[in-house]
Image 1 (cartoon, rainbow, N blue to C red):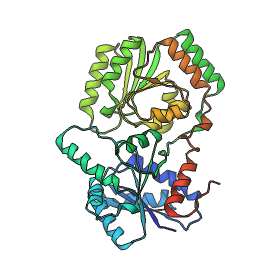
Image 2 (image 1 turned 90 degrees about the horizontal axis):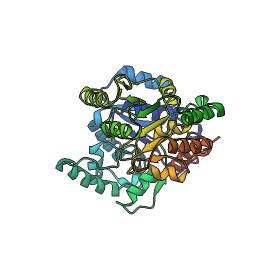
Image 3 (image 1 turned 135 degrees about the vertical axis):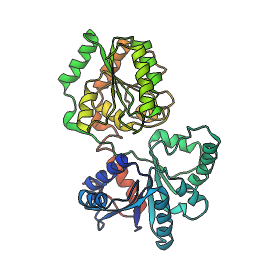
Image 4 (image 1 turned 120 degrees about the vertical axis):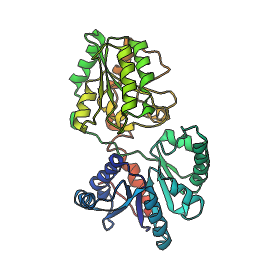
Length: 378
């Protein structure tokens, strides 16, 4: 039986705390091994109050915080030197020093597993600096022993490296099944589309990140549905994004009536966001890589049709689960939207592999493989 430490190598607070909550609420119930489950996490600033909050909020986890990516990587190297049999599980890998340490043999890749989150796999930047980094990163990836990914990302990775240990695993999306629409609500939504009794309400993107291609989305919505729409654009994340928000706002005011595009400049609490999403008739997700699975999952739960970029690898997972969706290359109008809504209403969400709690079996198997200890869903 091998010791396993979970590594969150970048200070991405909202994702990291989602992982902590998931492990505290669910993974701790899969194992009979003595707790706590061990984590090493990078934070922006060391804060004793934050460490105390972690201790109180996640009593079955042992969370060691390190200030910044570099300090975490250095601590990881030292830990690996003195704990020769310990294995390490990288949850998302956005820490360049860890990649370089694998190349330089400061870390032994045969002791590492990597759960791909999305952006840590793809190569979107075009500058020479990034091209060099991507070249190095591919060599480092070859040294990792175990890979976990969506089915689509696994196909992307398999084109780069020959590796038999690529297993399916999904990020633990937060869900609230208490707000799943009833049959009456689904029927009403369909009837509303059929009668065209009001303007469409459309969600554009899942954040303010430029990878959402908001400007392109506004053009596509205008071209397809004209001005008789209401558009909601969540842009509360990332921070310090005012210049890009202003650019999107200017484009929206140019194409649509003033007041018909609502740009959300602060992050909504989860329940408020879910209620906002439930009012939408359609969603556009135009990122060219796998991202936003959480919001896509919520759309499926709420029976909200959505448009996916044709280059997004997550379409592999959607097709595998027989979930209907539009691609940016699809011909769209009200009739096709009604047809897709009809099909989406019939999807049995309790059988979808990437939704909670169905992904728990993959997590149990992954942790069993890495530790040699059986993890059982009870």
